[in-house]
Image (cartoon, rainbow, N blue to C red; front, side, top):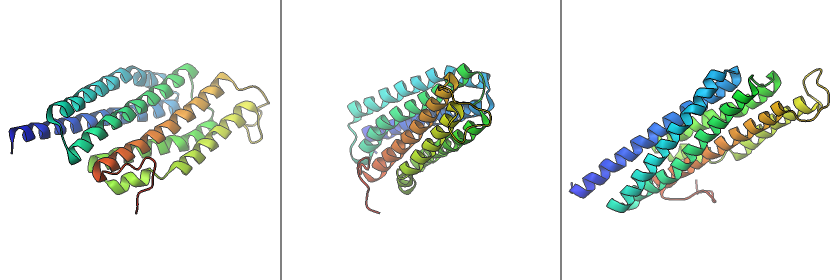
Length: 232
């Protein structure tokens, strides 16, 4: 193999490895943030917040490597799509890391877990976020275009889960029908606002996972499905 081609393949392998390492770190952060929220574990939550800087550093390393590949090697076809996909994907990974840190920060400021009824509703969205993340990274790792495509078609279900969780927050903290026994009507508390923001963060994680799936499909098939539905 030509020396330049060998160098390109080595750099692409390095880029893929760094992406998977960052993906693993983000996955751990998301899982730990959700566990800390469920348990009201402030130590665990603080560790997620502290670890966000390392994820940001990984993003910078991947950006630099990807740009270096473009400038020095001028890849084409699938190799070019992989580098472009990496530059897009790293943004979503970093944002998911930010959302995990945000969830952890709110756990720390609340100093306790959400009320049981609220946590149950938010837990459905939480499990969807974690599951989608695992599936998105698996699709990328295995170049599974069909798995990636399935993740791009769950918008309605995620929206339904978020709406159910937000409704439960409002019922509990504002005393709407269906709220916790003994809850009177009152304005939305600081704890209630945190509950809403946590649900929004989980929704954004799901959206970012769908983005990662779109990038994977683009790398494998060379088709951008962000604003269209590809033929089955």
